Image (cartoon, rainbow, N blue to C red; front, top):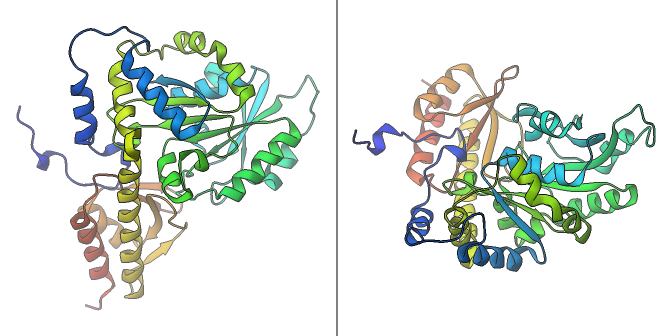
Length: 353
C-alpha cells in the first residue's frame, strides 16, 4: 500500500504522534552497513556517550527502548523494595505506566496533590514520617518531571531548593526528562534543566527520534549505584542488541545541539497557539486556560461546541474527563499553517453571528 501525508493528518494529541525527523532517519541510515559489535560496545555508542558527557558532565549513560523502562530502571537502581517514591499526583509514573514501578520494583508510590504538577519541600515534608518503622514503606526518592505533565517548568532556583531539601533528608532526586530538551532550551542547557538530579530519564522518542531513551546517573553516589545497572537492564529485557542504531539517533540529536533547534520550534508553535487562543477568548470564544504555557503544551477548557469544532481541525486529548480540561501539544513537526487553522476556527467561534 502507498501511504501519503493525507493518511496521517495534523494533530495536537502528543509529540509522540509526530513523525521521525529526517536527519534522525538519515543518521540511522548512515550507520546501516557492515558489522558492529552488539550491546553497546560499538564505536557509534562510544561517540554518543562522549556527547552526553559534554552536555551533562561526568555521568554514567545507558540506553533502553522506552520511557517507562527508563523511569523504572533509573528509580530501581537507587532504591530498595521496601522504600517509597514521592511524586506528583500527575506524574507519569503514577498515572500512565500501568503500575510498572510498583509491579517491577515492589516499591510504593506516594502521590502529592499539586495543582501545577510541581513539587516543593513544603509538600514533601509532611510525608517524611515513620522513618525507621518496619511497618511503613520508607520514603527514599523524590521523582519530578521536567517539564511537568501539565507543561509547567521548574526554575533553576526551584531545582536547587529541592536538591538542598533532598540532601538534608537523605533522599534521592530523580528527573523524568521525557521532554527535558524543552526545559533546557529555556534554562541554558541540558545540565541546567536537571540541576542537582541524581538520575535522569532522558527522552528521545517524544523529541523527533524513532525510538530510544537514555538513563543517566549524574551524582557520584548514583554512579556508584549504577555499577550493577547493566545486569538490571538485562533482567528487565531493555538491553538493545543493535545499539548503534539507537546511539546514532542520540549522536545526531546531541551533536551541535540539534535538540535545541527542534525544541525551540516546538516551543515557538506552542506560544503561537496560546497567543492565538487568547486572542480568540478576547473575541468571546469560550476558552478558560488552566495552566501556564511554559513548555510545548497548552491546557484549556473549551465550550462544548468549540471543543468539537477544534477537534474537527486537529485531534487533541481531553486530559481531565471531569472538567473537560484539554491538552494541545506541539512538536518539532508542527507547522505555522496548522496552528493558524486552529486559531482561525477558535476566533470564528468568538465572533458574533
